[in-house]
Image 1 (cartoon, rainbow, N blue to C red):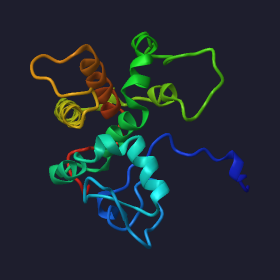
Image 2: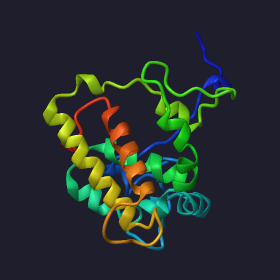
Image 3: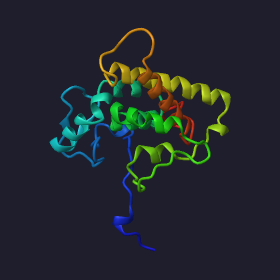
Image 4: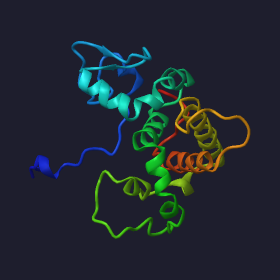
Length: 194
């Protein structure tokens, strides 16, 4: 049966595969005919000034200096997706959900009294987890990847100016979420071309 376009949900977030960084727009994923570059990095391109401005005002400011490092890491697309999720929603919004997320029930997830919204961070948090199916080695790898992503966010001013020493309460919370989402990924995250 045909599905009406109004019945389709857009993704809560997305990540372009690094092989397409020079040919497709980071924001709308369209093939780029005339490159509009980021003014700060050479890793990505956009199809229009509008797409660039939207990306830079939201998630790209936290990914800008991180993309080349992520590409060089040899990890597959899933860490890019996890980083984009946190960057897209931003620290203040995710932090505002802290009490709700920390009280979630493992079997029922997080519930709210509001109507379902597919662009809600809570709905992403409630996705089915397959953490119990991970081997110890895979869980350890995902922990390392989560720490790596946290460091990338720190270096890109996600938490404000970079501080030395112990992690702040916000950094610990975001690090925990990075691990949570990394553990929900469907396949191995260790190699770029699996």
